[in-house]
Length: 249
Figure 1 (spheres, rainbow, N blue to C red):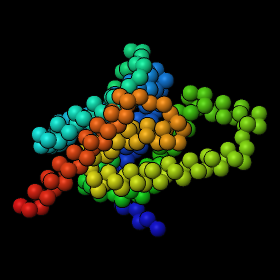
Figure 2 (tube, rainbow, N blue to C red; figure 1 turned 90 degrees about the horizontal axis):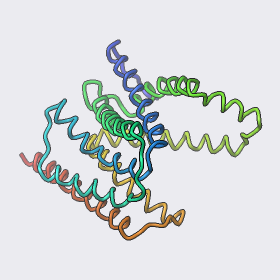
Figure 3 (tube, one colour; figure 1 turned 60 degrees about the horizontal axis):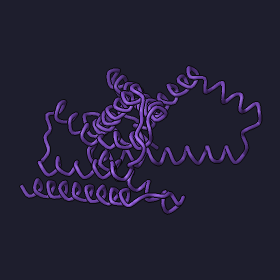
Figure 4 (cartoon, rainbow, N blue to C red; figure 1 turned 30 degrees about the vertical axis):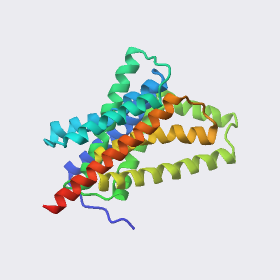
């Protein structure tokens, strides 16, 4: 049983704002993906670590070591090679994707602040408080965009089956587990490390696609995956060395 923290009106408003950020981030990402090519979308999303660093430097006056800054180069360059393909976009698609990158970085930093700042909420409590708010916002968005009407039509036409319901339930369980693990990892490892892990995820997604779905890739894509993983390993070593140095003081 999760014991909820007593929050002030201001703190509840902060959680409401966080839920809106969470919803808008997902919506913008999905909408922009329809307006740009997947390779371009992935390359732009790979810059999240840099945006995260800029947020910390601007808002929290936090700086990082030179090796940490340099480790961002192979992380982003590697994803660029790994996802190389046809690049196309509309102007609005490019702008929405750029906005999505900023929102994703802000969301990651905000999550960390909620769990390590003055509130210091647990991952479960953040989900318990934020999920109902985000769900209401998503339903309202679905009404506005006509998705609820399409859902009702599909239901009337008998397009839903027991297997579909089970798949939907499984998806919900996976989404819950993902958020729990993601929030807890963010609390322990930090926002920048989470965005670095996001770049690693892109490389591993391609690797899993090769193994599970026989996705065809070229030598350049393979080299890109290796560079991304090497960049992540370099970043991890830098972070561990920095923590050891701080602990020795």
